[in-house]
Image (cartoon, rainbow, N blue to C red; front, side, top):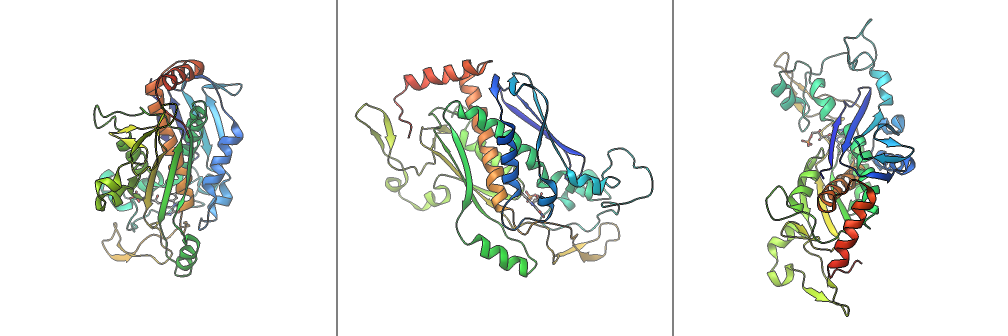
Length: 360
Ligand SMILES: Cc1cc2nc3c(=O)[nH]c(=O)nc-3n(C[C@H](O)[C@H](O)[C@H](O)COP(=O)(O)O)c2cc1C
């Protein structure tokens, strides 16, 4: 059983769309829980006024009846309220009438750090807007909705997933950067609790849970580094300080006192918390723009300036949580299968009854 996510949608287009396939039938979804995650993604220090404008909510177009999944593809939509300001500029069909609103002029001064230049060259575009609209992290809204669905599934097997900003001093860094009309990045951490041993596999590199989580996190805009457990720090430690000793309690259930491995050994979850971190680079749209070259005239200039966040680290914590939840749900669907929710949960139950594992 394979759980998949396909998304479509541009930043200022009419809507963002996701199709989630491979869910069991009978999973109850809570509209408010999905909308709460969408709201969490929009909050956070350093975001642009657009977040107030959008107030994202999810619409369900298929795969759900009376709040329960049908076991068929689930179609989710998050509309872009801002589209009304871009109705001409982002019209899917050739626009009618005189140009009006935003997005009417071509973007020819690519922003260093964004997809403007690479996308324009790759696709042969005269207007970098055709690249940046999809490259934009606006699409993470619908991925967060899909992540909320994944979390609803994982809850049935006792797994919770939580993302947070790692490290301190972010608000001060944001304040300073805003004053300087600059941007900042940061680090987020996602911890998944209750993950049973045995998700993922060492059989091939595509199956490894660490590789899959790294790809899921690197798949998020602006993420440039991923660590599993103690990650880069492990390189400087001795083996005796790096590995988590295996202990048994009075009932024979196995556990660890430390979790430097971040809950994954050999590409397989080992029953401890799965802990991953992602490093986000500073956002590329600067209110004091960097040097660029006009792709139309070849002349030196300054990069595009448009409404933008100073930082989106708190938002990344929510997006990364969704990405990790979806990947864990995918791995759980592979291991426990089942067309009906009860089959999936039953397979998990008989497996955890068989193994000497102690949930924390
Ligand atoms: C939640 C979130 C919000 C973002 N908001 C902005 C933004 O307002 N302005 C900006 O220039 N980049 C923003 N980014 C980053 C860009 O989308 C990203 O840097 C760009 O698409 C280029 O991709 P890359 O950084 O992965 O190379 C955001 C990223 C995330 C995850």
